[in-house]
Image (cartoon, rainbow, N blue to C red; front, top):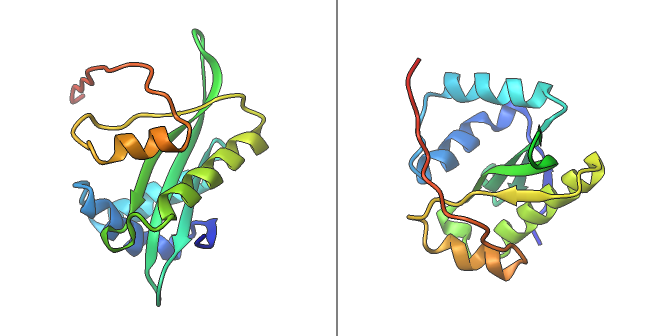
Length: 143
């Protein structure tokens, strides 16, 4: 299994590179500002998988949430594995690390959302014990 550690501001360029692989490009400045806010929040974690040389092989981001209808739980809000490292255990290691973070926070449930278009990821989540609970539409409105 790959080594997993907490992200640092020095990981910004690699996180941006990995995010772009999944279709979420943004400037380094944007990623640096976002990462800094997450690193300062006790309700968020960003964990990275160490790859070859100075490259990361993936990252996972989590958020501890509470809602009226469901109570407290942790959501995996991002999981990206480098295209060159897929199917090598990196994703599983990152999810296990996210699950441990949730346990350490004392939250009884963890969940995630996976875009319906990412067909290759659905069997992966099911193979590591996640159960599909619903399909939904997502809406956005610029303010």
